[in-house]
Length: 113
Length: 116
Image (tube, rainbow over all chains, first blue to last red; front, side, top):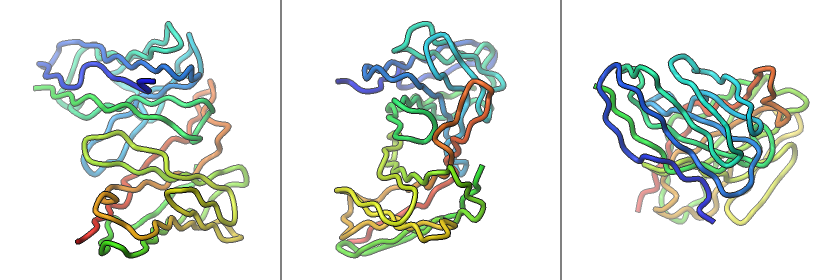
């Protein structure tokens, strides 16, 4: 099993550009999450999904959109990137809700100039 | 959501036992306590979870007193490879749900440095 994979690993965007981050899991998990991690801030939840076709807002959802068209994939979109969105983005999935064991991907380092 | 407080950083020598305490004074009846470990340039990794008393696995032990207002992660005989950030999470595992409620707050964690 590959676990949780994220594409791409690195990306540099100019302000105003758009992009989509892809998260894929092969563990048949119902729940998937997107976090961002900034120095001194810990991990903050952006959006999450409790099943295929469903999404919900987390702690810091503004400027991001998500979609869960297939159970194994969770996409994070930035429609108009801003420098404040420079961060490391982690995707995670879990079999159960909430803070039961979550499996994290390796992260995507995004820089917006 | 129960707010957690943990030390920002700790140092330990190789081979010693390390105890990291997390305070969560307003923990709710349905809340569980979960610890994650994160190495540089990697995503967090689940270590252990518990509700009360003591939980032990092959990696660590988790001690939770009767009042549950704090918990202690114990790492036996640490090695250099245990240098990482350790996060304490407290919350109701029934959440999040589609109403928007969520309890997935990692905070800033405790940076453990193991010294040779």
